[in-house]
Length: 127
Length: 107
Image (cartoon, rainbow over all chains, first blue to last red):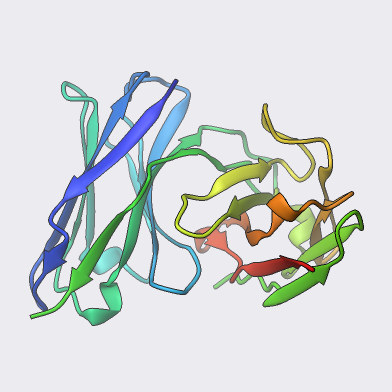
């Protein structure tokens, strides 16, 4: 059974960099069939996609966060990581890692969805 | 940027049918997915590719997508279905987009 587990500091100071790692077990992050993503959820609010990475290192980022986000992958450790720079209180959220199928694309859209999620980790931005 | 709009809340009586809508410009031309999230838990995929159910999801969950509206339908709603539901699609400008979420209350 595939499992994803987020880890990292739960408290980050304003203007500093948030760093999280997702460890994948029960499956290989190097599978050609999947991408790996980060999604966050501020307290009491909805879901926001942050970005996605392929095992080769190809990345896609939310345009609204792109200037501050870096997602990387370490296939030797079966992990992928998130770095979010210059954080503010607005970045306080539960951060989830998740698996996304490679899916397929028609002329108008792509069939991308997240089928496995980690339990999430709360990151609070506060001095 | 592309946006998906959901009603903040929907109420349904036990045993009845609940419909949760997700509106977006020509969303029928995109593939919609739906997630269920119960308090304190991670989201769970309940519908993908507009109408498909992952293994383990009850048959009472179904989906449709046409025109400017995608719909999640729960037939014979049970108390355990009370949760927040999110739609999601992919757009070439914003990539992955989620709707704002709908709180389903089973009265």
